[in-house]
Image (cartoon, rainbow, N blue to C red; front, side):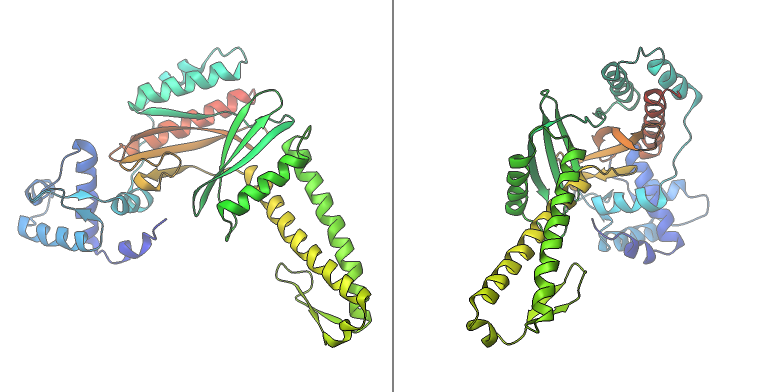
Length: 354
C-alpha cells in the first residue's frame, strides 16, 4: 500500500482544509468539485483563484485528478486513502440505525447461518452497498488445501474439509514466496493432511520440524567437534554451517555423506518452516480495514471499496468478518460505524453475550 503520511506532511493547514472539504463534497455528490463551490463553503474569505492554486498543488502531489477539461477535481485512490486514514471524521451511529441493527439480529435461534444472512441483509439495506460476510472458521478434518497468490502481499488459502465445507482465508505471505513455492507447500500438505484438522496439521508439522532440527543438530555437532565445520549464526533463521577445508572431505566418503545430509536437512527445514508459517498465517485475522479501489485485491475491482470488520468469539478470537462493498465514493464516515457495530453485535450473539 502507498505511504500516505508523506503527502500529508506536505500540506499546510489551508491545503489540508481545502482537500478535506473537496473530498467530503465529492463523497456527497459524486461529481467533480470546482474552486467556486469550495469558495462559497469557506466561512473566511478565500478567493476561488487561491483555492484553484491549492487544488493544482494537491493534483501535483497525486491526491486529486481532473477527470475532464472542466475546472472540477476528484480525489485519486491515494487521496481517498489519505482522507480515510488521516482526516475522516467518523460519525456516531444514529439511534434509528442502532435500533434497526438490534431488531434485525434479535431473536436468533442459535443458527449461525441465519444470523449471518440477517447481518448481510441489514448491511446491504442500511448502506445501499453489497454486503460481505465471512463465516466462522470451520475446524474439521481437511480434505484439500490450496494457496492462491492474489498479489505480492496478499494470498488466499482455500480449505476443503471432509464434510464438504469450503472456506477461504486471506493472509499476507512471507517475503520471497512465489506462486510456485505456495503450490509446493500445498502439495506437501495435501499429502499429509488427510483426517487432520488445521490445528492438528500445524502440530504435526511443528513436531516434524523439531525432529529434523534434532537430526541436524546431532550431525552438525559431530562435524564441528571433528573440526570439519563451524556454525555461523547458530539457532537463527539465517544460520549456516561453514565447512572448513573441503580437501579434508575428499578422502572420507562418510564425511561427504554427512555434508550431503546436512544440506538436505537445511533445505527440508527451510521448506517446513515456510509451511508452518503458512499455517500460522492462515489462522490469523486482521482488524478493521478499509480497502480502496485497486487496493482491493480480493475482488480486483478498480473503482470499488471494501469496508470490513472482524467479529470475535467469547475468547476474543477472530472467527469471521462482515463488510460492505461499494463505490470509492462511499460515505465512509457513516458506513464504518455501521459495519463496526454490526460486527460487534454478531460476535456478542455468537458468544451468547448479546
